[in-house]
Length: 344
Length: 261
Image (cartoon, rainbow over the protein chains, first blue to last red):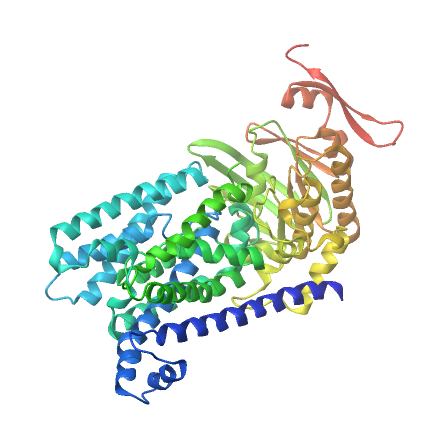
């Protein structure tokens, strides 16, 4: 039958994209795991990962590269899916953790927790908790300021996100000056760094991001209906208020977890879902999980490049690379795809 | 059978509906008319609990919809909303498939039965040939047919249409309403239409509910409701219901506003 064919074709396309992205992710993960100041082959890296071979290799792969790669995958997946969900609930392709200022809000929370440590509670608890609180604060701030009569126009949403984001970035900078030795430098907070983490932080970040993502993926169908408009979704039996609140909270949680220990890595949540939508169409049941895969692949690739490109000079902050790719794409979105973005 | 009992609703202390009683009979096409702000759309929104009444009840087959979940209601009642502008590039088929949402559990994919129902709905509304076209590249009439197909895919007993012909050209207006009439005749679907378009309502509806000042002003067959006096009283226009010689059907001729005349 012809029509079963069209559903089948769509499923085949999604499957093909899944296979491609998994392959790319695996390749980038191996590149990044084998990235070192000495010559390390894929094979050496793979052996070392499971504890075989040269002791230096094992240390490099398990102690240095391993935690960074895991953290990078989690952060990329989290930023990718959060961006996709925000674009769906704001019905706006420009929404993302970075553009809406949420990453900066979360970074401020994390920086605050670091600069004023509470002696009885360890940092690995206070940092993500504060990041989450301030991420939520930013979300509701941006959401309520930019909402005009039940609608969230692109202009106000983005301007508001930029304004609130700048405010929190400035506050983070202030904190780094006031409490310099207790916390990471400004470069860490504004351009991200995956390498400051051991396994312990990953153990916190990975489950948080997986749990939040699962909640979001489970709502793919409802999000599709909400992209048509609240009235459509309600008529199709969706409890719009409940789903929206659930999505605002879980995307904030995931963004906070993604920012708390690695700082702000920009544009992942904007670029990845958007490219996937161009290839696969807007169905969130495919876009959300694939944004996780794509986000992870994008972040790990950028991490690898940031180390490999100018290896003689040192390591670039990863955010430079994601922004170098993401910012032009953002401008392209504004110019080329105006009608889709709702600017006319 | 859809029953509305003593419905009251206010918006920010301003009464919008007060004391509405209405029985909607299975299989009928019923039109709700009235001037701007008389509460037509508000009434429609109460029928599928898009709004909750301040006082009163809405019953589907004697079950208070207050006790039903939103997706259970969507299994009985489908809506074709007033504005159907959609900015994302879902295909026509994606949109119609959403009509099966109320029947699916979390993570459950569409079954072959769902796909069959969707294909059937698209066939009835004559949109099978553009199932792969994007909704945001379609004309208003095409889009309206996709949304009606989505409503059919919900396999509802009742379809609510809010100003179904508002943004359509004349030929599309007839096409859409002929389609609705056909569905009502052939499938026995109950149809509730909110509209400003008196000639259209007269032509297609079995029964008309005329609202004025938050209340039902008149209710009955088009001939009973659309008398010269009622139209003047409710719409402040000079108009008559008459049988058109050429089509043999009722129509409304509007001569002008009563204020200037």
